[in-house]
Image (cartoon, rainbow, N blue to C red; front, top):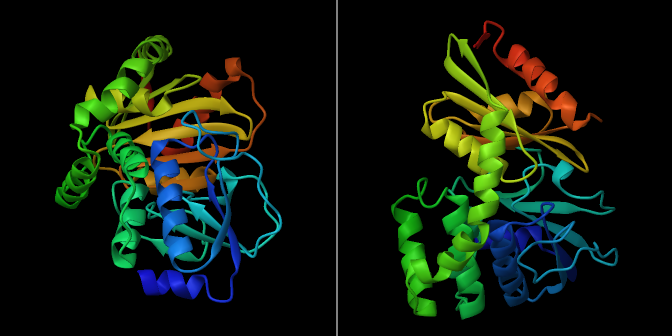
Length: 296
């Protein structure tokens, strides 16, 4: 992998590392580790960029223009970043997305892909980045539900590096988000629509934030497919979850986006109001599952 990255950086003197909009812990951790790796390879990193910011800080919002290459971290589709004028490569873990040159490894989190590169480069991850990496892995694996043996091996190394238990790292984040998530889940359940189809029960809803948490909840109570919408500046985001259907293919068929077999996101470039989201979701269900019938 490291040799592949060297090839992508050949002839490049200055890069910017860019995450998807509103970078979460996984995207930011991936970007911060990539920054270390790229610097180790002798290339200057102008900035780590989080378009529209990140609640975790540690990055800038403005994309620099005076670079030779943009390295996209945890970005499945260019629709997830502002327009850039220049060459792009990606380091990602989403198996379905835009055809952007780069390195894509099917891992539960993008942080793990960056850590694999750091291991090859012989980089000792500093404690502050290691702590962010723990949080990134924890959240992007669905609180470790999608973690495998390799994930836990890397997590153990990181926890030993920072000398903390997992609960000490993720506890403050969990407590800080608890009431906000609860409110989002309650609102989402009030807006729930349920369909019966040949593939099983399909559940849809919409919220302003914490779409993934709601989709995970719907999946946990037995929905074969969960689709949760939210309004963002760049359009309508649809979060998909399923344990056994390839929702990445479903998401990609609707618009710009992609993801994993069991978890994916797409962006529909439509200007709609919040009150129009239920009808948009009904249209999506009818498009993807023509035999779906609403349950009352």
